[in-house]
Amino acid sequence: MAPSCLRSLFWSGAAHGEVIVPIPGPPTAWSEVPFGDAVQVLDGVAGRIRPPEPHRSGKAIARAVASDAATDLADFRALSGL
Figure 1 (cartoon, helix red, strand yellow):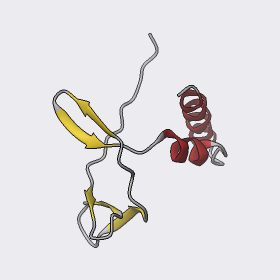
Figure 2 (tube, rainbow, N blue to C red):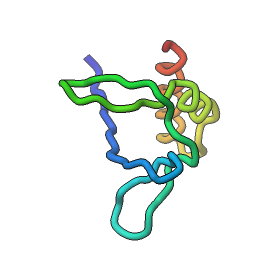
Figure 3 (cartoon, one colour):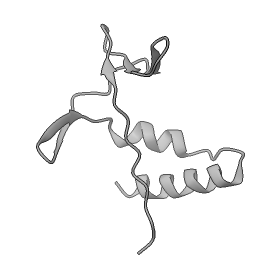
Figure 4 (cartoon, rainbow, N blue to C red):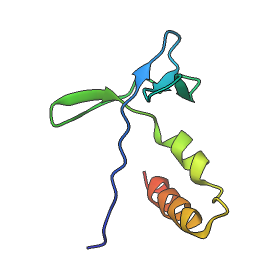
């Protein structure tokens, strides 16, 4: 089996639904719009999730660095199957 990587990010919603990354320093906006209303549960913990389309469109054009481009292509192929 090929190795896999799980990237997780903890975030909190701002007053108008923006998604803010809670890191030290000034608030950093990840998304200016709310993620949506879809909710999924993992191991008893519920959370709102982004629909696949923003992820797909964000990966449709690969970045310039070869290793990043390979990741983008693999992500795009995986997301296209959803």
